[in-house]
Amino acid sequence: MAAGHNQEALGTEAALILPPGVRTRKFSARLPRYIIAALQGLAEENGESVETLLIRELHGLAHTNKDRLAAAITGFAEAIDWPLNDDAKQSC
Image (cartoon, rainbow, N blue to C red; front, side, top):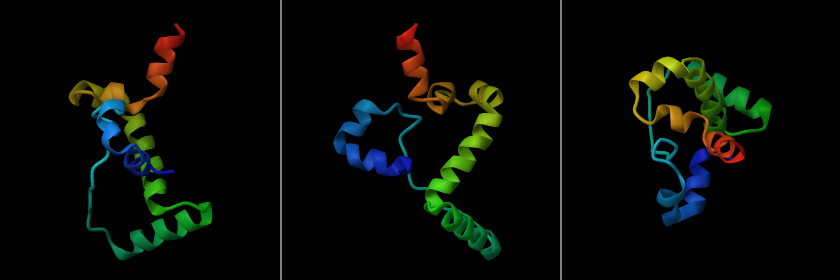
């Protein structure tokens, strides 16, 4: 399930449960048609939505650059591994 669907399911409780950096918002971009077709084809092969595929791939990109981005973006470090970072803190 995509992150946005989780937030929608929580409704008004989302702001109380999800850290600000994890909450979703709509984002649009203009892409060449071959990229759109590629995303649709890959998502279909994986039995997932384009949104889910994009979230996974972009999370990988963000994670690869985690240290640099965490230094530049407030709340990034807390958001990128959520909820795993909360679980790790509680088990210590």
